Length: 76
Image (cartoon, rainbow, N blue to C red; front, side):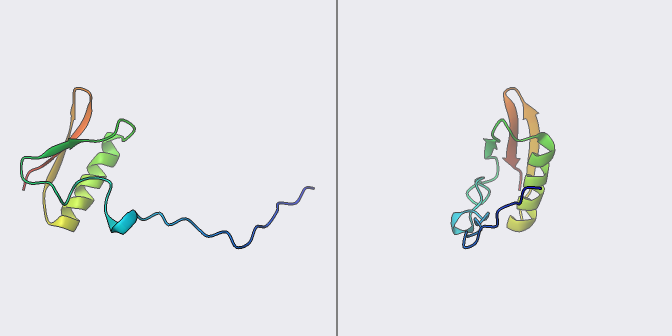
């Protein structure tokens, strides 16, 4: 039976964004603004991101499938 090597003193990567900022422009968006999610994001995930951002920033975001991908609008 082969053994698995144990490594020590390897720091765990921090998964948080730099400066605590999201990779999506939630904070900068004004009512009527929109952005396209990257092509690898699924609609279910986009809805979840928009819902959580709405709670965090006290805003309303809507997600729709459009030609070319998934888009998010700030509604309130």
